[in-house]
Image (cartoon, rainbow over all chains, first blue to last red; front, side, top):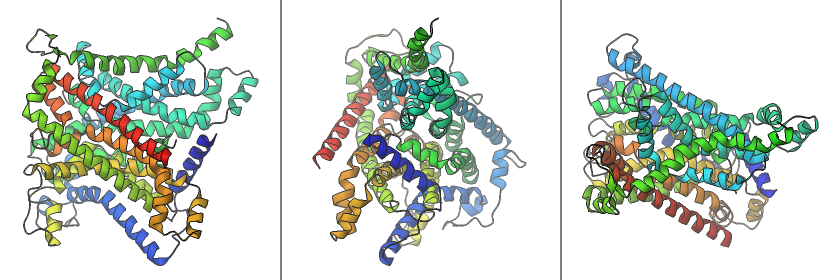
Length: 308
Length: 293
């Protein structure tokens, strides 16, 4: 099928690109090469400057950060703000206790949501990709249609449902809402990935007497690891970044994720910008490291099925 | 239980967790929003009763909410245009292989991967009127005479600057989608164009552009849905001031500060319908053009 071919080619090309410095060197006429280098420099500056600026401020002294004109390098370079934020000596014990607890909450909420979403999505996407059953198309299209559903559509009812079940300010409420929100995307990514796996593998397993479930567990899942990794990492990042839903579903530090705490610190106005930036950098560190380390899965997940 | 029976019910077993989740936490809530939008729902002032279009009438006479609709339209217009144009530019710059392209790709994904709240807090510091680097840099370049208060004074400037923060986050999405489309174009088409003596601009317009139209449509619709929902950046950079408020922020305020749930439902329903209509229209328009090209 031409469609699958295109997708495969794209995935291969992007994976090659993401695989690193194996690509060919810049070629072409010198003027055009220079233009391209300049363009890439601008892209890097645009992507990195705000992040650099947060790092710069967080590593400065307060008088170094609050200066005009601004210092483009932290002089002197100090780790005071990080020590404060993480509670490693120095003032700011209240902030560091809050920050640590909210990081734990974020990890539990996005981690659990990731595991649940991926497990449910693997089974469902496999059924959609490989098995025949009544109303398959209707169910598949309705699930994917919720990808277009804005948060508006479900915000208030979800809050009321959780309130009526007495689940407001529990991990369970946050996790359930995340899973329902992330499932359609995870299914879309996995469904597309399963479709690139040749049927022969499962047919061979069936000839050997394996049931479809066995074929899924023993043959398909091992081969689909990159697709599963893509769904997992993207789901985790989405969970870590959530703000509006936890803002209404969590009410105190026992469940509030780090996004809610950073927003609260920002609103207090008395937190110095150096400490605020350190907290921001800490809150962003886990997704940043994951994105840098696993970027090829993210690229593959984002572009899954976008070529039609 | 016979093997064939087990085989027949297997698909239903596999999809049942999905159906339960999406049914209970997406479809039921959406239906609930649709119905309750026509009811007066005030948790602190019961009873709940049917008001027909009462909630909607109230929304359209509220000047703050009317402002937020106009603001959101501007957020969407800037968001869609800027993220698709910048995304295309990035994709074209990254189209050809070069050493370290993998590293560059990993870096451009970063803004997409970080929490919008943290990004907004960082940009808020960049825009800071006294110590912000934007003022300092523009002043050093002699682009401005004195330091400006960027946010909260001029409505349109505030909206543009807040939307830039969102564009910074969502452009990688457009760039990757468009890059994937560019890379699926057959190299011999470019070869043929080169033989015909076409320059880079003509090659892009005649070969790349028509072939990446579907990807542009998808990128535009993604940007549309994201900017129509803008909340985190507005919450951090504008607060609840009417000046730069978005519809999503007003939904939050109406529901959870004013505790007027009916009004919140009505706003939600309007935006949900708007999202559906606009994204269908955008997809239909861009796909039809793609076929005609």
